[in-house]
Image 1 (tube, rainbow, N blue to C red):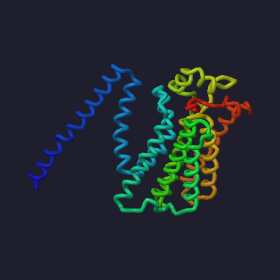
Image 2: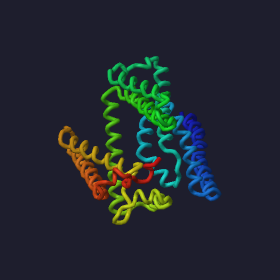
Image 3: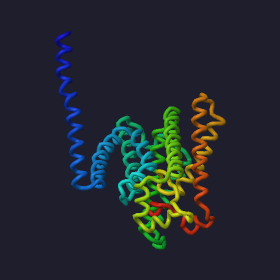
Image 4: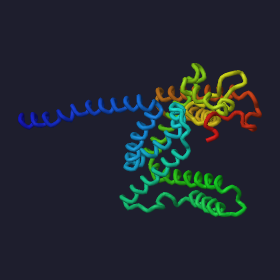
Length: 303
């Protein structure tokens, strides 16, 4: 036994030494790339490498892919403001939804499940009819701009695929409970960051991103000075609508959900933060006609 344990220690020791060496090598490589190409390009390269690994993991684990797609819709716009890039973000999120769909299909193929499992609802049939009608309208010679209609058709297909993934993944109460927890956490974090932006000011990278484009600066500016708050989301309109919905949800959970006092307090804190963020959004929108003429649009609304 002693010889065996000694042998195991000798085998594990090179692996233990190899990990710090590998981390130091990656750190040095990242530093060299940052010096040679600059911070934005270095971050894009690092994100590309990480994205490749995440993509493989998403194919292997559909639940992980599902939550990556949801989380990305919250944070990817803030990340691109950080690196100061104008990558087509909506397309990136659509790709994540498609990857989730492929991962679900692979799992269903391995399990030998039917493609239409959990899809026998009349609501799903209605959506399929809408999709068919939208597809036929694309070939309508009097349908208008083909490029714009293609974008609309792509969005309809992506949303329908996302609905399909939800039906295949949220099949029991445990999965549904996990989904609501993740969604509530994202709402709470967005509310906290919105309050931070309003009380302590926007971070420098967000101000730089807004002021780098005269159009963005004009759309986001307030009459009294400063800029409208959008938290992690693509626009202040999205942020305001999300905070209105999250305030109602947190209030309902606080009043009706039977749970521990600690969770009750968390729901109360989250509700207060969401309500404050919604109030801050309303305070920024002093002009009642701003939404109609487009002046309330924030950075990234035009993407």
